Image (cartoon, rainbow, N blue to C red):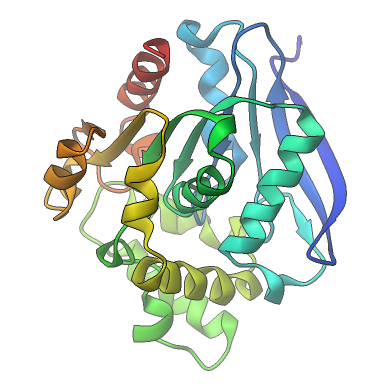
Length: 267
């Protein structure tokens, strides 16, 4: 069968910690897209880009973050959002994407925001798919404080069960694969840094001052987010995905891809 994208493993160090980053990518003549997956997801969330003709000829990169998927990290306790930003910068250097469109979901949206904040000249547009920009966005990650476990595995087991029973689209589907997609030892550092940045990192200000065009995508079940009118009034394009909660790539991927293609196509 002809390969529609390449798979690779990139070995390097982040903050003195050895990582082997598993990635998928495709070349092409158009401006590339970089995808950053959310907590509990993997690079394969974005593999279906090759199924949509609107993206023909457009290069892309997606990879498993440290602690997730097929990526190996020598010290899981070092992983945090700043660690993931350093990883992203290193991956951009290795793939040669100088300027690109950026899309990130949840944890990946927060990582993307921090990346765009430190390298705004490289980001042509930013699609933030329910990434953290305010304290209220920590409905999953704040459980590291509200429901601490006696050890990483105990916390993660309980987190999976709580997630499985959430009254939201795709929650059970998402929960079913969490144990296979995330190492328990990485959860505490990721969640703690997400909460700290959401509460004290000035994320809203960072998001609104980005010079590139921005779209905030959210599921209809989260249409009550308090800041939606505020960011829309400050030039952010809103995109509500129907029949969807926090996971448009699982609940309504067709409309997700259509919205991404339409937004990038205008750039």
